Length: 259
Image 1 (cartoon, rainbow, N blue to C red):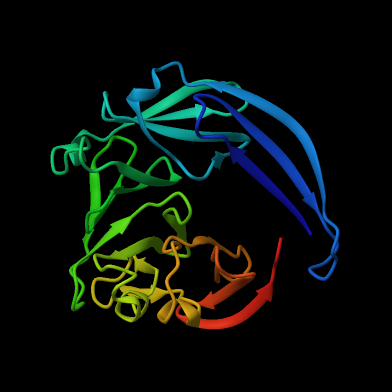
Image 2: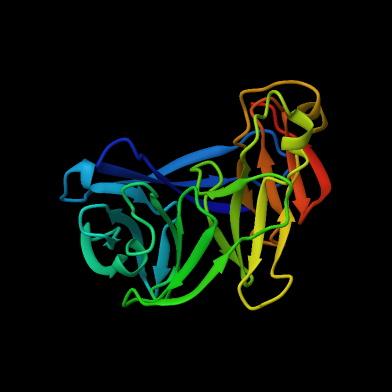
């Protein structure tokens, strides 16, 4: 199997993207070979205090690839051509900033394409879909019937992700995870919003290892990605030596992956 990984070194704004090809012949093979192909320096040409958030994923159109960042000063998302090191386009966020002040709610986002951009004002309960002109096309208010308060969040370890008509977002209970372990971890770590349904449009995704219900860990922010084969959610927990693979909320496999 061959996988292309693009790593964005976020702490630096003269950013380096390292493109790596990971080669391995099968999941049972122990040795993996990492080959560096190219190092690309991208200059965002703006002070770092004007950059409030990055896209967690690159996206492509034709033979071009882009990364994106949001400017807190201009209330705008800028699309940067990775290979040309050049801003090619921009999308206004002013329609959403008029509803949620981005000085308090950082705009996390996922770009499916230029006309389908999902925006989450971080630590709120609302998700927006905008087009390339910045017009709000749809919005989802998550008024879930839970016995506790909660927010949606775009943690870098489990960022927003779109696949198969669903947008996946981290759900964070406003509960002390140490004093109320069972109540906190009974809530699934993610929700999936079906953008084409008006009723029963969401479902819980993922789960927690059993020991989180009885023991305390400073690890309530698992890393999460998705299989590009079957859309299963894959979770990594700092206190665990295995990967947990879920089909929605059903644990289907646990794979030993100690580093």
